[in-house]
Length: 282
Image: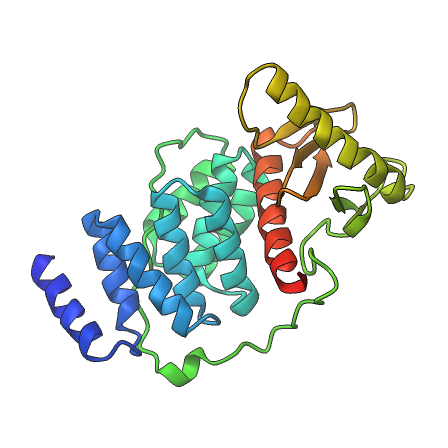
């Protein structure tokens, strides 16, 4: 493996624009050199932001670093560019399983197994998840063997360009389960619907900023320091409140029956989208 890394490093140094970074990054990750792998993956993504394999590599490295929310987002991006990407379906299935979402995990693992029917380990994972067996020791799937590809194949995707006026464009629940407001309670994006379907976006926006201020005040009074999430559980909906930026508040809501871990993933992904949108519009 050391010789492989040296050889791949030499190839990458000789041609930084080549796709050898995918093999080098994976070799470094498997050797446990996560920081070096991360640097290589980010350099590759900078050159090829529309390459699904680059997002897959970055997501696996993020998973090694226990940054599951960002890894989920990267695999989701890979699937938007390549809906049949095996590695992305494996990874998202793995993360859904960690969050307690067996049905969602099974959905993605079955797709991956159908795309790679010779992967006996993947078939075994599908059988165990489908049968309800506990597999918390299920290893993070490694990358499939890299495909030979040219730099031309990594060109811009034909996927639809997100609406620049919508911070949650393309996200499930972007219109009725995500609400972004400024410090004055002005709705900046998204929307919120009550369990009976009523649009309560404006009413919730007015309360959301005040709730964020009170949460910060309570944290100061209790000497809790900074706070990251505030979770509320109701009869029909559970909500997660967080601040994508010092001047904004975000509310993410999901059915109470869903695991709390899935709500956290959802909220963190929405916060990342909100921050990216704020950087573009400010």
